Image (tube, rainbow, N blue to C red; front, side):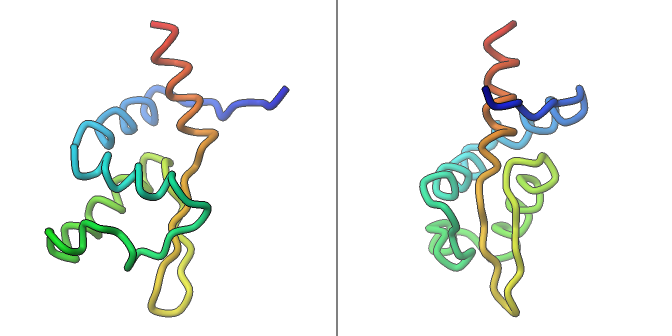
Length: 94
């Protein structure tokens, strides 16, 4: 049995705020669909400014939902599935 990530109240609320934005949730879905996604591959780059994409990624990182690994000028994004599963479990227990 895998031990789940323990969420404190602040992180639980931070995740709720992060995923409440439709664009941010769409970004999260794209990242979750792959093992590692280059930041430049996000579809949002076609419709919103790079600064706005960067802001959304910062919010997802701070909530603990994604991990960003810098490789020179690029960044690879990965989904923190254990954090998401813990968040969903806590929601289900309400």
